[in-house]
Image (cartoon, rainbow over all chains, first blue to last red):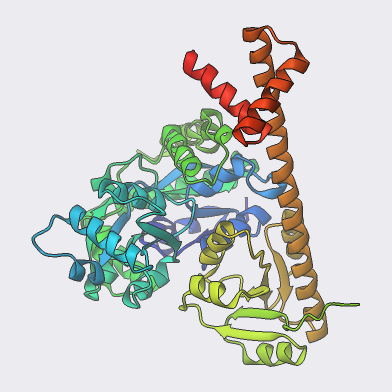
Length: 329
Length: 193
């Protein structure tokens, strides 16, 4: 095996495991090399996976799920055998919201009043998520529902790419958003808003990012190698004493100050590098249900068969069993 | 006699490229050049562009996809502007139908044809989709009418012809369609069960 494994990623805190492989030079030990390719949008990343321009990607689970539900042309099917992050999102509301809610009101009542006012003025409350089939959007809908707000009637949803989310909040184009770190902390640091919930506090079935590959690549030596590297990098990242170095690398990749990156690595919205990386098909099924409710999928696509075909815990178990044997004691 | 189409083809260019803008304008396009941080939801709503040109690595693509999935009224084709695009990748992309790729190396005339073809293609695709939706609806309605007829036949001892007549009468009296009458029969059966 003497090949280059090209892996796409979006500049977010939970891409750190992939970045760490490169920075720790874990790929120097084997016959293969890892090449990281930064993608500007989830759409670009998805197309690159479907066309084979990249071998693997740091990906929203919704993308491989849609491919298995045949939502993309020509039946290219993607799957995952490795979970990269469980919790990484937070919901931030802009100052514009807090300024218009009387201080003595609980947040939900205040939001309901504000939603009504905005409806009457013809400018609905607007919230941003990052992609139509993202867990971000499901979390946002869920939280707004808990506040007594209804999509369509009380607010509209737009898609804002993470790196532009903070600008959109600043310009008042959105009243709040649900994005992954570091962008919530960047908004708070710039005094543009407050974080009101995160993936942990919402407690929904939580698979946030996966390593997505073409289904035909699942059993390849290259994929196996990549999973071994990810395991090693996660183990390294699980050590708190390594977080200083990790933050520095992330800061170079995301081009943001270490201070705003800390909450997503060591703080309240941190990626849990110790958590199991084994795909959980029941999380996949939940996401299929959410996509169907949001109108992105026909009812027939909500099946445990599609969930199991996409979230390959069997491949994970097979590959990591070998990993345990290969591990030097 | 040809109806006059007064308006030039309107292109939204999400990229800073003055050279491209000038050459498109020379080809007779109306070009609106915007930066990535602008609100594409408003822009597309206000400008109603006929086509959108964007670089493949632009973050704005995700917003544009969401927008396209929401509005069926204006099927704007999106063309991606690569500096260089390997031939095999272009073919793969085309065969996937995920996106139509163009390169910035094209001559203005070729780009013009490409934009026009894409607009035409998007319109046809839209027409096919509408036709499909209509057919699916007709098929579903026919199924419901058949089910309703079977209920009337079983529960009320009507033959097929009488059952259809009964549905027609219901529709006429209630000033609704036969399909709606069938739905009512199915609903009342469900309530009984």
